[in-house]
Length: 369
Image (cartoon, rainbow, N blue to C red; front, side, top):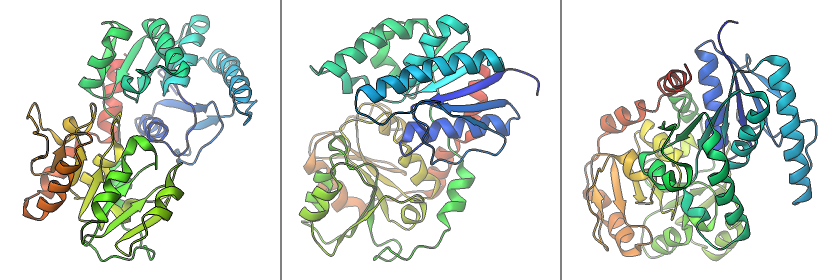
């Protein structure tokens, strides 16, 4: 196959949003008939890649804490050098910080084009933890050497500028296989206790940054139904604390789309997000959202521009509603007022099309000419 050879590199290709987008990008490049392969540090893959895409395995993958991760990272570093040199890879597009660091380090030896895609907010590292200080150090020292630095939103890029410099920064959002989302959403489900259009839904990791307790506290006080799809470190804590017939914990689902499609509204209350994939997925399925206005993602996806939100209130348009981060009263008011708002499935569909896999992949190809 003629043209450049691409390697999509990530920590893994399992569970997380950044991991899924890495596979989406590879699939999109293969649809454009590009020579593309996958390689992950941890040899985990639950997201399906096209048959034409070869997946390289890290020869050493160790699950031991700390030391095991170090061994696995070193193995990935040397094996990537081998892959690039033997198969003459021209471009490595990496996703998530650990993969990004390795990509840049390897480029010092192989001289390939290194494209690093940042999925998380810099705010997660602005604390006194040793691990955060190490990451800030590596971002400052290494990102300068990347051929291109991709950020998912303009706000995210602006937040990183003091750490990565002004050059070679590009904003490209995540990409989605919209047809696949629609097809998967038609799958029949039997474990949802609520009727179509009769429940709100949360889909995501059960982690403190998601502020799930604020969602649950709100719904324990009202008469609406709430369905929660996902798992994580806080799943059992909430499942046993919030016992109510109007609140259902389904756990993780390999296909959450039928549950989203049949919901009246999708909820997001996060303190921080990189680019919340579930908002685009909801729009594709014609489901409006109520979201916190965390620093990167929701405001740009919902297209609110610079509209100011007052504390204790919300703003709304034809796609959803936005409230201030951590503002429980604003969130409660949005839930209470939801039935009075008018939403447009056409507007949601048009927004989702901006993130179609082919469109976004062509932006990457234009970047790498």
